[in-house]
Amino acid sequence: MQNSIAVTVAAFAVLLHGVTGLDNGLALTPPMGWLAWQRYRCITDCETYPDECVSEKLFMNAADLLVSEGYADLGYKYVIVDDCWLSKNRSADGKLEADKTRFPSGIKALSDYIHSKGLKFGLYQDWGEKTCAGYPGVLGNEESDIKQFVEWEVDYIKLDGCYSNVRDMDRGYVEFGKLLNNTGRPMVYSCSWPAYQEEKGMRINYALMAKHCNLWRNYGDIDDSWTSVMNIADYFASKQEFWAKHAGPGHWNDPDMASTYLLIGNFGLTIDQSKVQMAIWAVLAAPLLMSNRLSTVRPEFKEILQNAEIIKVNQDVLGIQGTRVFRDKGIDIWTRPVEPVHHGNYSYAVAFVSRREDGAPYPYKITLEDLGLNHRIGYTIKNLFDKSSGIKHYALPKTVVNVRVIPLGVVFLRFNVITIKLEDDIYSSPLLNKTVTFT
Ligand SMILES: *[C@@H]1O[C@H](CO)[C@@H](O)[C@H](O)[C@H]1NC(C)=O
Ligand SMILES: *[C@@H]1O[C@H](CO)[C@@H](O)[C@H](O)[C@H]1NC(C)=O
Ligand SMILES: *[C@@H]1O[C@H](CO)[C@@H](O)[C@H](O)[C@H]1NC(C)=O
Ligand SMILES: CC(=O)N[C@H]1CO[C@H](CO)[C@@H](O)[C@@H]1O
Image (cartoon, rainbow, N blue to C red; front, side, top):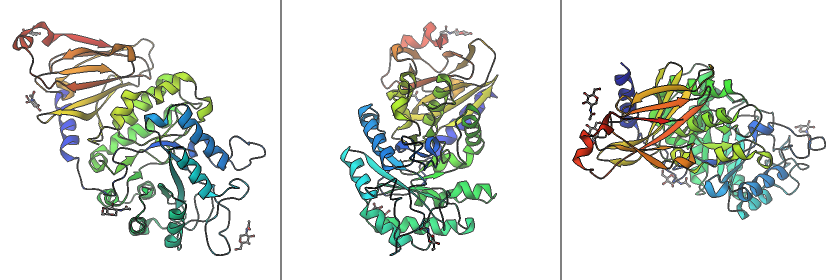
């Protein structure tokens, strides 16, 4: 039973990837960067909260810190302005304007500043009469607004869906995407359309979405809590059969509007829960958009956000979205096929996530074979949260991995296929039946 489940789901994920999608040359791996919403929401009172209000200062500061704290070098390059940047009314000639007190230099100046740091500039709008927070939306002004985005040198548009007719979204979001394309300026197109249709119980045309959007939000806002992170993970697992196949280079599922927004470094998650989020987001090929206060992220959280091995899983060039393949004794197993590939056999990132709350680390044993890892020549194993371990393990399909997962924690392993044929006697050696342990 165990065996067949793991193998079937892993094979399924591999076979169905590569659905044709948007081809604008962008987001070939999931976008990474920083976005204001989850942490700063719609704080507009700059007198009371000068360091937290949605203002040019906030985004310039984020750009500075992405570079100076080393995030940019690891790929976190989009600085994305979310809702509440606008003036309540359009200008006399009908243009979108930023709030003049909070963005005194204007959007073009902010865009220039972000570009001067070697980063990319993202902006929020809404395919409706108003944005979710009640500022002017693009509906009825799509063409002229897009012209303005081009003048502002926007690199990424997040298009929300409040105050619009969900039944018209299939048409409206597609048209908006075409207009973006017509400008000739490369802009990542982040759509919110499934989250709204899902809410109304509509059938969602994911194939259409993948053809017109670089990413799409599948779920409501994340909150700063373990419950919220796990609700999103569970929801994704429940829909993986329909969703995973639409992900690929240039087109990604976005675990939710804000949920992609890594909470790590805020208030609600412990260090180990943060590791769980980072691991699951890597398996899901989710955009890695932080929403935190970069100046006060503690070193142990920063280390999680800057774990190059896990970012490498997230950014794997094959772009296959992983799935939850098995649940047993309170341990959820998530796997994602990654590079390198040898004669059709994939390497894998495998996360063992504990939902258990009973004290001691829980030892969970499983063979590679039961995980769907059948590469005869074997695999090397790397423990991705344990930098000191390096690659010390060599394993065959019959090898047993024993992971000791702490309560509400994760052990995240990478199994790379071995591509050279090893000595024949290795296959009859006790290695075959060896148990390797990871904590
Ligand atoms: C527009 O679409 C074409 C065809 O998919 C693509 O080759 C091109 O890169 C796109 N251009 C922009 C700016 O999105
Ligand atoms: C926005 O425009 C409306 C009329 O269209 C006007 O009543 C309102 O006072 C304006 N608000 C601001 C903040 O200028
Ligand atoms: C592995 O264990 C099985 C029984 O558990 C045994 O039959 C087999 O000979 C062992 N193989 C090696 C190479 O030790
Ligand atoms: C070379 C090698 O080990 N190839 C394996 C690839 O995976 C299939 C199962 O999916 C094995 O049967 C092959 O032996």
